[in-house]
Image 1: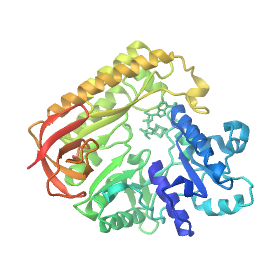
Image 2: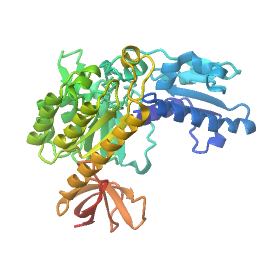
Image 3: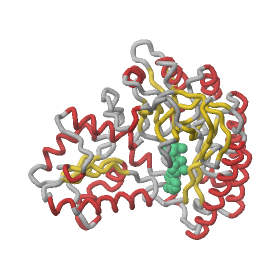
Image 4: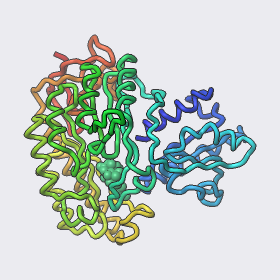
Length: 432
Ligand code: SAH
Ligand code: SF4
């Protein structure tokens, strides 16, 4: 989401005559786009800002701007030198990016400037993002902003504001532009894409996510469509059937479960149970055979017992996730969990549980990858493999990484690869 937002910021700035530089020494202003999801993310931002301070020695006029969720969460306190132990010139929240050129005017004389207003209708629909992505194969397209689910642990509703959907025509236009520019894969982004909705003023028709994704898939059958994230409460069988109709909608669903214990899920305000989650998994496997399922898991949420943790491990086995993003619970100021519950699982216990979860996921991923040996997949070539220039890498529709000896093909091409070996993270094979 932040990657996509930075492309919007680049577009706003370049349309006002500013240039982007890859060399930080050349910059007159540096924006850091920030994440508040865990304390660790914020600490990394602070370290990054500290590293940038040395540039001011050679260039005293250099300005630093903090954008995004941390700007929204910490607001004017970021402008106080004592807060971070350094000077920040500008603070702009996720809905203030159109105002950046104006804010730059405000700071020119040495003052500080801030805009952290959240807007109920800002979707940057008309802004064509400047594409940063290397290779020009895969792009992100934001289809909605904000979130109103208020999961107890999560800071997003406070930093990104009300949920709002982007007008579908502008999304489809952006996809057409990407197709013309040679892109082969687009990921539709939102915190909860299954609650996408747009009511057409003229006809009164309602466009839901299932409608939007079929419109997206029809732009160009040579473009793969992915999407993230689905909320387990909102993902519908209608969507799964729609996916089944289009081979270019990727067979991969990211369905964050967070915990396998009903007591913890209730406390997290996730609004589904272990049983209803597993029913959704069963529906995915029934309607979309061969579809990969990935998830997010939080270890050590408030009051989580060993029994709760074991239920997470057993749910991982039952669901058979192809991969997971796994985190230790990090208390975020202002959230319901921070206000109502004690962060009472000791750090060493969170670490132990997280490690068990990671180990379990590696076992399951390896088993899932082993099942792919002998099968042939259509792989979109993304470039050279990180380890060796003689190998190429790409992804299957299931979003699994495949490494294979380079022959005569280029980035952005689809090739058929037969899998002959694997690790828990990668499939290996040869082009057939
Ligand atoms: N909108 C998406 C996820 C957004 S945040 C969804 O609802 O699934 C991405 C992931 O970060 C979450 O799924 C969760 O697993 C993790 N996360 C969010 N807040 C967290 C916190 N306070 N501590 C640890 N992990 C957190
Ligand atoms: Fe956060 Fe929950 Fe919204 Fe996801 S759905 S962004 S976890 S509040």
